[in-house]
Length: 141
Image 1 (cartoon, rainbow, N blue to C red):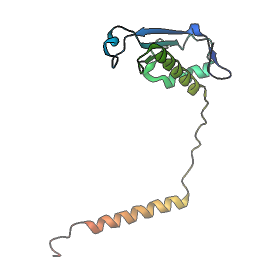
Image 2 (cartoon, helix red, strand yellow; image 1 turned 90 degrees about the vertical axis):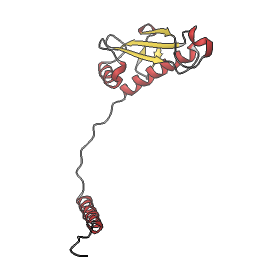
Image 3 (cartoon, rainbow, N blue to C red; image 1 turned 30 degrees about the horizontal axis):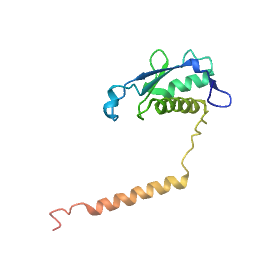
Image 4 (cartoon, rainbow, N blue to C red; image 1 turned 180 degrees about the vertical axis):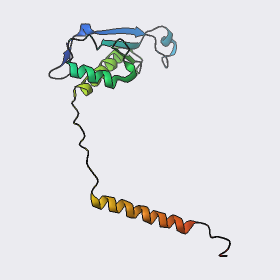
């Protein structure tokens, strides 16, 4: 079991890891060893996630989630497979933790009368500065 929060934990059988060849540094080893990790987590069919967390996870995942509801995380930051596995798992945990946080709704407020007055005075002041900078007409020269 992988512990996400105190209430949410995911079974290791729900996560599938596939190892692929990574691009980038690695010298002669890069063409021989599959060090990159592609982690797949089926969000839609996961029994460990509450419905509200599942919906928020789908929203914040963006293009990392497929049309079938499978979250795909590619980890190829490091040269060795073990570090990439840990990186992919950490990123999955972080995503689910962000989805588990309930965000407060923003309360709309109106600007105060003083702030409105200050804004309009600043606009008038700026306008006068720009009027002063304008070219002098040829009739006045």
